[in-house]
Image (cartoon, rainbow, N blue to C red):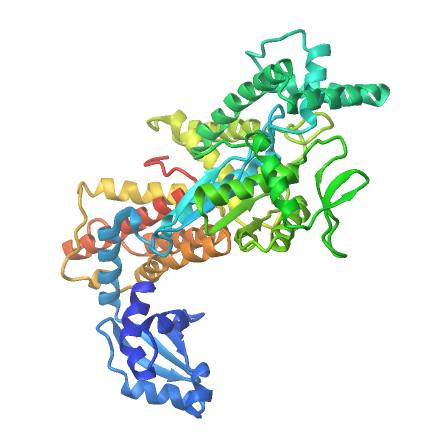
Length: 565
Ligand code: ARG
């Protein structure tokens, strides 16, 4: 609706003595089309004009010179309701999409600005479990959304690759690892060692001291400790990268906690110099008042912590990227951690405090059965992707056995289903995995959207044409169903914008479900191929535009859009 808002604003702004952009911001989309396609609420004008809003609306309706795209304007209550001309609306929307292609819906508001997105960030030497699935897919989608708004997005994987647990890993590996080079099933082996360590330490508490001693050696740069750490790091990262490749996710930097080890010293100095630290029981802390527990920065044995490395990372990112915002897509249970970091920065008087944004999300709940989380068995993200792909392959074998590139499509649809299930609802809602629901081609699912896209592509293929130029006569698009699709298409930019501003890819998910539903209604009520040539051409152009927006929307969520399925 952005393009129409702008045209209305051009005409309305001078009558109000406003900037056109203010009018654009004030224009609303009425809850039902009987009230028009756009509405301008006159209530905010009442005080200044000393008139009742209905009077103001009536007066404006009379004086306003209508832009070409507006068929009529009506004053109802305190609103000015605009009705768009069906053929002009069709022409403008389809031309805009044909011209912009995959950039349709983008904006330039972020040009010249940097945004850091810290997401996924699994822990080295531990399996990449389903617990890290939401941050991974949300972070990827938020990155793509901000890129669409013109921002320069810096994607950072803040790997959990430092901390006392590496002392435990080293002890376990030396005691029970038999010098295994970890060339196969590395993560599984490391995880079993990790679990064993925790079982053994119950019986043998001195193991804990050994682990602490090894971590201290690691922090001091000891050669043997570093060699083992590096082994765990390399095999883990190799494994994680495979998962990212499957998901189509890339990072600009894999700078985990270890990257900041040589930077914490300076960071600590900086915090101390601000005069906000205290020594408490031999540890260095920043007291944060009555509401929050103090932020612990250095233990009495000199060991640094997660928070210390995050502070060093904040200072580093500020200097390296000059970001407008640093967005942390991290589970809700770390809220306290980010509140503490923010408050430490505030106490230091740094504007960086305002740049820090924590974007939390709900929990992943797996169904009972094979995928359920048992004690000592962590469900891997890879297992979930594997299962989804296998299930889709079965569906394809049954429903469409002659499909070309069957395996590739099964992977795209299976993974798409998993990703969409993460992004379908608001991010604070728990994510529940019910396979039948996740993979239902007719439900509110990724496969349903992909299927609708493939259906569009199949109609276009069947037409035998390569290009879908607009005919002069667009009366083939004046049906209610076609108009509904066109209006929905025109709202894509607003959906992207809102999704980014609220860190809610689900806004785009909902938008795409609505678009698919509108399209399917059009498809079922309006004949496309075999109509009068102008009608056919106009409807094919509409199908082409829907395919473009679906593909682009799926991309923004992180899903592929296969041609056939
Ligand atoms: N590795 C952490 C975890 O798995 C997440 C790190 C998030 N990023 C950060 N800068 N603290 O819980």
